[in-house]
Image (cartoon, rainbow, N blue to C red; front, side, top):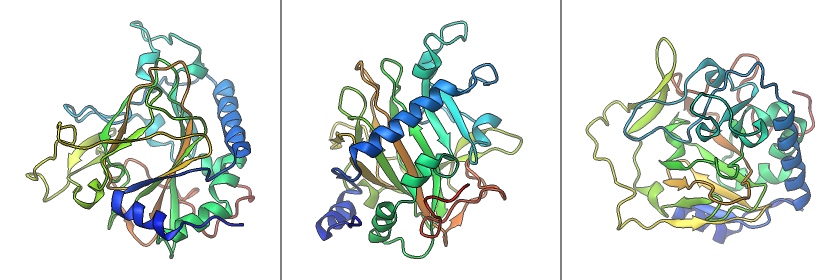
Length: 305
C-alpha cells in the first residue's frame, strides 16, 4: 500500500513548518542506504581529492562559504566534503577518511542505483503530491550527511530557501534518518511556526569570477534580522529513529548541534522544488545540460542515469 499523509499530519506541517513521520521507510532500506554510504566512503580516492571542507552554514559574522570548483561543480556528481575538525594544524587528516567526511553529494538520487530507487519510489512520490506539489516537482541536492563521532560539526541557525532559492519560494526538504538521531549526536531542532514569519533577506549566491558569498536580497538590505537564538525563542528538538522522515518547509528555521557522542548520525536528504518556479541563475547549485534537475513524478526509480 502506498503511503499517504493524514489530514492531521498535513495540518501539523502547515502549522509548524516541519513534521516527523515515524517509520516512513523500512529498516531494510535504512540498512541498505547506510551500507552503500559506507561503501562510497571506503572506496573514494583520497590521492586525487582537493581536500575541500564543508561548514554546515557560513559563519554569521562572515560572508565566506565553501565555493571551490569541486563544490560548485558537484550538482551532477558524487563528491565528498570533509569536516574542518578532521584536519590537524598542518592540514593533514587526523583520522581515517571514512570518519572524516561531512557529506556525500550532490547527485546521489540520479547516479547511485540504490539512492535512485529510494528517491523515486511510489511512497516518496505520493507523499510529495500529498503536500501540494502537483505539477512538476524536481529533485535537487541529494546527499548523505554523515555527522561522524567527535568531528560532526554543528549546523548553525538557517532556513533552506537561503541556499536553494526559487521565485516564488518552493523548496521543501525530505530528511531520512538512516541511524538514530538524538540530542547527543546532533538531531535537528526547529522554531515551530517560523516559516510563517521568516522572510528571505539573504542568499548564498555564486560570485562573478568564482566562489560564493551570502548576499542580501535586493530590496531587503535594511530588513530587521530576527535573533532566532534569543532566550525567548522556543526551540523544539526532533529526535528520530532509523526509518523516520522529517519534512522541512523551506522557510522554517532550524539547526543541529555537534555530534558529542561516540555514534554517527547518517541521514539521506534531498529537496523538492516546483518545476514551474524560477530557479535563480546565481544559486550556488546549478543544473547542467547533461543532468537537469530530474522530475520526481516522471523519473522511473529503476532506469539507468
